[in-house]
Image (tube, rainbow, N blue to C red; front, side, top):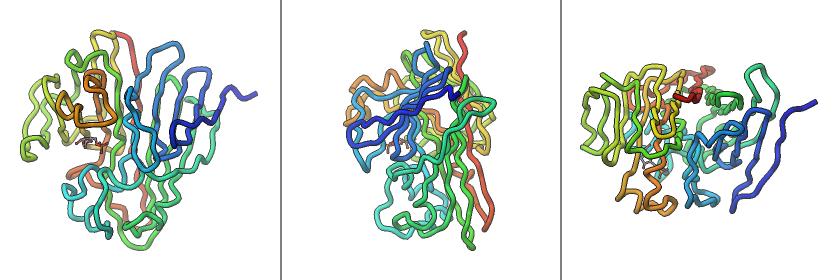
Amino acid sequence: MATFKVDTEQHGGLNCWRISSDRAELLIAQQGAQILSYQRLGEPPLLWLSDQAIFDKGKSVRAGVPVCWPWFGNLQRNPEAVQAMYRGEQAPAHGLARTRDWLLLGVEEAADGLRIEFELPDAQGDLPGWPHDVELKLAVVLGDDLKLSLTSRNMGNTPVTISQALHSYFAVSDVRQARVEGVEGLSYIETLADWQQRQQQAALTFSGETDRIYLATPQTLSIVDPHWNRRITLTSSGSRSAVIWNPWTERARELPDMADDGWQRMLCIETANVWDDQVDLKPGASHSLGVKIGCEMI
Ligand code: TA6
């Protein structure tokens, strides 16, 4: 007998699935295969969903895990090989995958939880301005941890280069009290100071707008949240870069889908392949970008 449930829900203009197992619950939108919320039963949410989120077609929701693909952020800030893949006019921020409809391929029970698989059929030649043939799948495992794996397989006969990120929004009690461990000693790109390369000394704490690309990242980063007595641990695979973002006061005020004080309760750590960590896919080659998100009480 199945021990899981899949319900369809409409949120504004978006079709969503609410998928629950005996351990956890997930809300995910068809657009972008975007996880909107995830929580283990009886526990507060791990991912952040903005109070003022807008659920419109063609716009990524300020929540959960938007999938940035086949480029991250501003295309002009990407390696030339990533830029050269795009033949369109105005390149949207964070690529093309987060605003397209994905297919739910299936839900099945696996040893580590409920495995849910999505595919973006448009990635095989039907993305505007991006005429390449890539099989793009997102596997989600809903268990005691949340596991995500984004696999790109080059089905064409010319090389493809991408950048990408699982742009995860985490819920925190107050970002001013939180710290990120695992970045000590790393080099990072300070995008707010002319993209200068700098060196991180201690664990990262927050006292202003933050938008950094960390380089040569270790497998594990964690968010320590002393108010909520919890540690969220991100264990990555297929990634050597991570973006850490908090908009703080002024930028938050500019975002129509974030409350003026919404920045206090969120923190993005984005498991990525960005900057010099781009992914080159020869014909037939595949790459998986993965993250396991776990949480423990401290
Ligand atoms: O990942 C950080 C970032 O690129 C920031 O620069 C910030 O703009 C954020 O992503 C959100 O982007 P979005 O297009 O979703 O508003």
